[in-house]
Length: 115
Image (cartoon, rainbow, N blue to C red; front, side, top):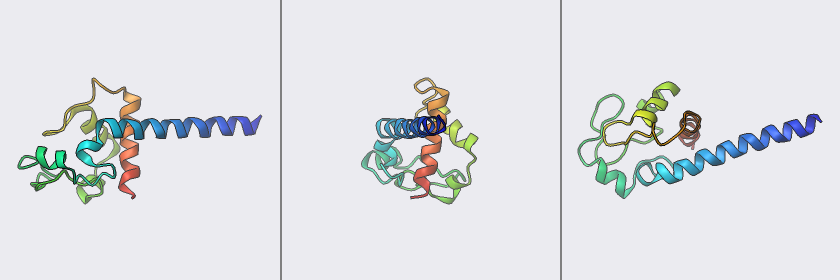
């Protein structure tokens, strides 16, 4: 019985991780890159002169990397707010994602930051 519960919990956690990765791939990777480095053609186009780091400094010609110091310093709540409400050229996903999916996506960004 305990083994069944443990396997069920592991399966749920894996499904959540896959869902977050799928959401990221469908909604985020085009601009932020599959690895979160922000160095994509779309990211460069959208950020040509308007993107700024979390510190308010110009980000240059690419999306800010997820492992940039100013993004690493963001709290989970701040990261969730950016996903939900958008920022600069990044669209808001609050009406497109559930709160649970938004939170899972923020956790997935944290995974990408460690790579």
